[in-house]
Length: 244
Image (cartoon, helix red, strand yellow):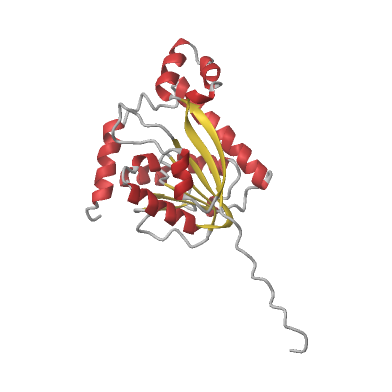
């Protein structure tokens, strides 16, 4: 694979913050964060499509090791209708090892690869944009995602909204910035996820305290956005004048 500065930069930043213990699903603050997000996503899918999701076509940008796509399969989406694109080869290899061959996985830069023109019902990203430190990169990726989703389809966004003063490799994406990136979309936004440093501390006392502290909205650091692409406008019929 040829040298790619963007890939190299992201790989080095991911390597600096890799911590198998901190982000393990065996940690109470981690599984509660994940389950909270899963519940919110399920509510959105049920509201939009009911109980049969088998025909939904979904693409994940920045699919990582494939965990989110596995969740989509558990919700009933046909693996043949799922796809993921991942920049970092080692993470793409992890996804390929756990997902069925019928799931389309691509190792590439989403800004440099066709994602399909209006092909997808859902195009989703989870904590990808907060790793893009350049405004132009964010805008390019947002355009590619918007072009890929069909009219009437959805961009599903989950990312944090505030900066982490202890981690210069990421930056928060405020809700107003999300609205700038997808300015043509219709937005439904909800706050999720107890601030991770606080979650780690309170869960050391007792895991049940996660929900207690998370009940305070301003301690939630992430945003789940359901961004609907307006349906294509119908061209009005041309009515001929009398006697034409």
